[in-house]
Length: 149
Image 1 (cartoon, rainbow, N blue to C red):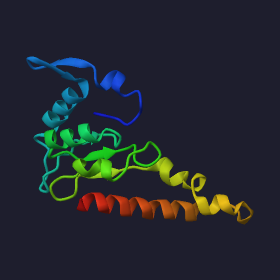
Image 2: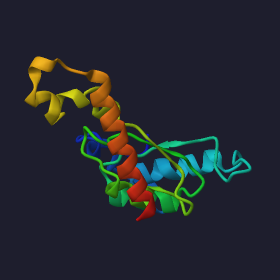
Image 3: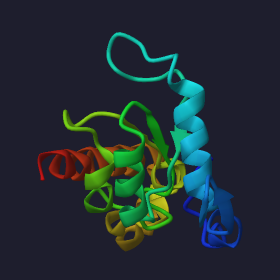
């Protein structure tokens, strides 16, 4: 974990620590460690076998981490239910529009809770699969726009 999406993450991840001869946030120090640990494990497609968790709700820091970690896959939680959007993730992609795996567990599993069509017609019952399908399609479209932008 480098920079997570939970609201209290700053309490630990932004602590100032000595990083070489200067002070920097702990998440930057961990990013440097991830880079170091993975430098000899970069495969033929340019990515290290060592990945990083970088939350969707800190877009500026995520973009800075992408610059700092050009050969690292990002697992990105915080999309959807925690408020992250495709627009927030524009700086997380590498120069080829790759390099991130976006997770939206609650946004997809709990999509039925926010589906207006289902809430308008409760007598029809809840179609969990349909609500999840619509959430996945919306996520796909949102991320495609982010990759293009």
